[in-house]
Amino acid sequence: MTQTAPHDILLSHEMIGPLEPVLTAAGYRVHRLWEHRGRLAFLAGAGQTIRAIVHAGEFKLDEGFLSEMPRLGLIACVSVGYDGVDVPWCKARGISVTNSAGLNADDVADHAVGLLIAVWRGLVEGDARLRAGKWTHADRMRPRHSLRGKTAGIVGLGHIGEAVAKRLEAFGMPILWWGPNPKDSRWTRSPSLLQLARDSDALMVCTRGDATGLITAEVIEAVGPRGCIVNISRGGVIDEEALIAALKDGRLGMAGLDVFAEEPTPPARWADVPHTVLTPHTAGGTLESIPQMVAMTVENLRRFFNGEPLATPVSA
Image: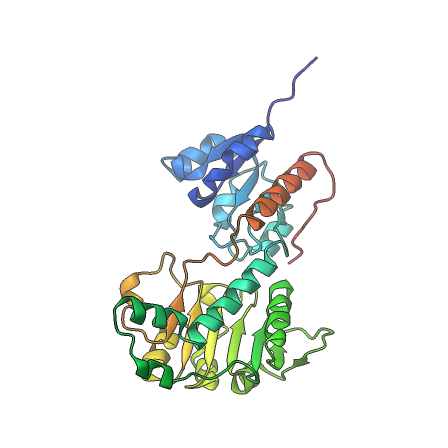
């Protein structure tokens, strides 16, 4: 009986290196791109046999690099996001793209709400004051606004946006939303992103990660000196320079950020930026969601190599 040779797949980034034992156990021969000394050497060798790439979707995959792998047929993004992949380019060349759509939406939504509460109520600042021995009785006489009755504006009403909206609605917050495409929803869609920003006390950025530069300086200022912006999409969706300037000048009240223009973001960049709560791109990763995303990736690989319809194909 002839034994079939294992399929060659490529791990594109060291961040997802821990997936190798899972993929090896599933019968694949795994190559680690970051361990190859040069692009040309890789393409002349292992690159000729690679059938699928397992990818962390936020990192850019160069089309020139992909075009040099003649057997490539699948890019399986472990993440929900796939903004680092030019899907139309891949589709035109017969390369399928998959992701882990919706699997961590609740976890990301929880994190987004946590960022909002933390910065709105000054939880991190209060913790720091207490630990530094600066707690005084006067602190209790400097109250902050309640979230109840404040308007939440959701930018992007996908899986995550809907989960955020449901959570904030339970806090007694009226919900508005905006996205480029109308959809059926019990919440009102604003006529424009700028109008949504003007009407929102808290602007929750939940849009697709490929919406680079969507949150402009004008949108940031429209939220205003008493408002808050929370971003759990991608750092590039917001004009980060404009955001920092607005926070320093008091033209924007607060911000909660889990994603940044450069990651890891330089800590000095935020050293003197007031009224912020920052987390290191951890919203979507929990002990429950990560195994589900890995399992979905493995299932898409299995289906691809068996000629079956993919479980979570990305259409555009």
